[in-house]
Image (cartoon, rainbow, N blue to C red; front, side, top):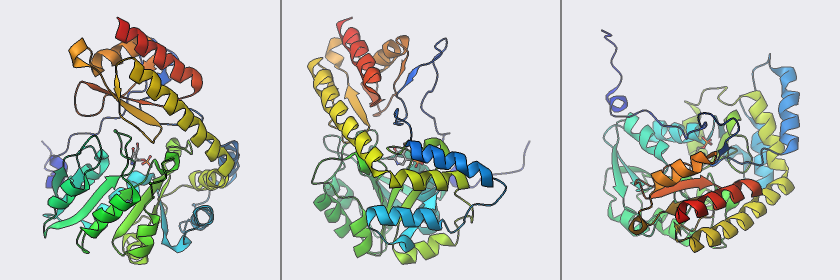
Length: 361
Ligand SMILES: Cc1ncc(COP(=O)(O)O)c(C=O)c1O
C-alpha cells in the first residue's frame, strides 16, 4: 500500500473525460465532439511547423518573443503583456496557481468550462456556482454571490458548451461588481468566431484594470489543438507574478513557429470565420425546423435540446448519429442535450440528414 498521499484538493476530483474520438468498426468517423476545426490549420502554419523540424535539437525561445510580437501586431496589443502557454488550459491553471489560495472562493458560472473548476478545487478553493438564465451567463446571479472571500471569477465568453456570450457592457458590469482583490479571468477561446457587434473580447478591460486577464487559444479557429498553444493578455503585474512559476520552456518550438504563421494569415482565419457563420445560420434553421431546440451559438459548435415530449433524448440521438459514423458530445448536464461541432459542408449535411432521420424514426 502506497504511503504517498495527494494534496486534499486532488482527492476531490474525478478524472477529466475527453470527447470520444473513435467508433468501433468505423475507420473514418466524422469527429465533431471536441470543437476542433475540420478545416485544419493555415497552409502557412503547416509549412512553419515543418521548417521547425530543423531545430528540434535546440530548446525553444523561452521568452516567446516572436509569437508574442506577432499576436501584438495582429491584435494591436502590447507584446509585453502577453504570456503564451501549453494551450490556454495551462494559462488558466497558471492564473489559478498564482492567485487562488486554499479557502478562497472561486466564483463560476453554471455551464462554465470545466477546467477552471478542476484547477480551483486542486488549489483548495471553494467553488461558488451561479445559475445561468436562458443558457447565458447571468451577471446578476454571479454578483449576488460575491463575498469577502471571492478571489477568483471566471467566465468563458462565448461559453462552452452553450455557445452563448454576454455583451461588452455586461462584461463591464460583471467586472465593476467584483472586488479589486478578485481576479476576473475572461476565457475567450472562441472569440474569433463571434460576429455579433455587441461582443467585446477581454483585452480592453485588461488595459484598463489591474485584475483582469484574457485567455485565447490556437486550438479552435487556427486548427492547432495538437500543438498545445494558447496565450493570455495580462496586466504587467500579472505577467511578473505568473512569470515566476511559468516553466521556462512551457511552449515548444514547432508550436511557437506554427502559431506565429497562423495568426499572421488573417485571410485564412477570416474565411474560416465566414464559413462557420454561414454554416451555423443554416444549421440553426434546419435543426429548428425539425423540432429540436438549438441554443443560439456564436462559436464553432451548437448545443441542442431534444424534445422529451416526443420521446427523444440526447443519448438516443448520439447513438443514432454514431450509427451513421458521426461522433457528437454529450453535454449540458442532462440527457436532453447534445453538443456538435460545426464541420465542413459535407459533414454538416451528414449531421442534418441523420438528425432528420432520427426525429422521424
Ligand atoms: C471555453 C474553453 N476554454 C479553454 C479551452 C482549452 O483550450 P486549449 O486547447 O487552448 O487548452 C477550451 C477547449 O475546448 C474551451 O472550450
